[in-house]
Image (cartoon, rainbow, N blue to C red):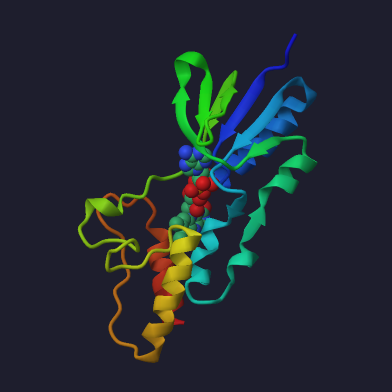
Length: 175
Ligand SMILES: Cc1cc2nc3c(=O)[nH]c(=O)nc-3n(C[C@H](O)[C@H](O)[C@H](O)COP(=O)(O)OP(=O)(O)OC[C@H]3O[C@@H](n4cnc5c(N)ncnc54)[C@H](O)[C@@H]3O)c2cc1C
């Protein structure tokens, strides 16, 4: 009989750790696969340090394929386009289909900069440390800021679910 296939969707803090735990628990009794949308893991809580050059990107980034290979976990970083629960299938961005018996969804937050006009790093007027790419953009803005410092506002907006980093970033800026 074929082994059950357990698929973890997303390889951030939730998905990567879930994959290790599931593989440890299932051992050889199941095939475990991870589908993420890039080949790298980022340690999100360190993004604020990247935004002030206390860390560079490579210090908080891990290449995932060798890590999962070592543990016997299959991995692709092409990303999932569609989940079809009725068929127990994932369609990937490259058109490939993955059949699963069990699916763990750990795709993280869907950042909603578009809900507030002018918010966010993509054409908006604010910086973000939600993603490593944003933190690198923020680091360039930080350099300009320190050339000619003035008042600076740090905050989170309506609907934000994670306030800690705003306080943390205010204290980092103060330091
Ligand atoms: C600046 C900052 C500081 C923080 N500091 C702390 C802290 O000190 N302590 C703490 O406990 N928490 C902290 N948090 C919160 C913590 O980082 C998050 O709770 C955690 O990263 C959420 O993990 P996750 O796996 O759900 O999502 P994420 O880490 O966002 O990972 C989601 C993954 O899913 C992938 N993905 C998304 N869509 C798809 C798709 N369609 N197909 C395939 N893959 C997909 C993404 O590429 C990503 O790899 C902080 C958060 C921020 C933003």
